[in-house]
Image 1 (cartoon, rainbow, N blue to C red):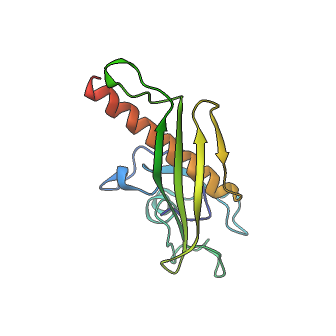
Image 2 (cartoon, rainbow, N blue to C red):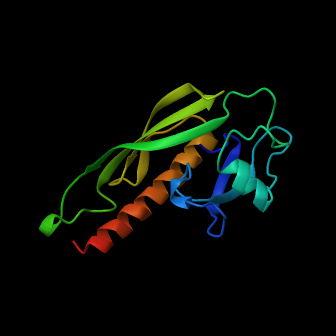
Length: 158
């Protein structure tokens, strides 16, 4: 669950998470804050590792007292291929539609949820989130997911 006020910009490769692949956006990200009064501030490394990439950052000084959400999480709910290559080799990108489920949580309970969809043929989002921060997080999650799938397909030798 990433902080809902975190705007990810680039992969953060040298964070100190024990399992970076388990992070809410699929890996660590650097970026900036969008919390009221802190727009554009770039958090220090410690804040990125403890708050921004994880959500539920009650001890973060930038987190507003009144807020719609505490954290955002994503999961792939459908990954439909538009075609196949010979020998059952998967197409990693393009030519696939990927559906993401998202949940925005407040006080450890779902507050909002829904589906987002990316069309790999057109290379664009068919169903987007209205909040630009959540949409950017979805894009980062998808980028990490596709890179992981590509490396899995390459490693399998198919």
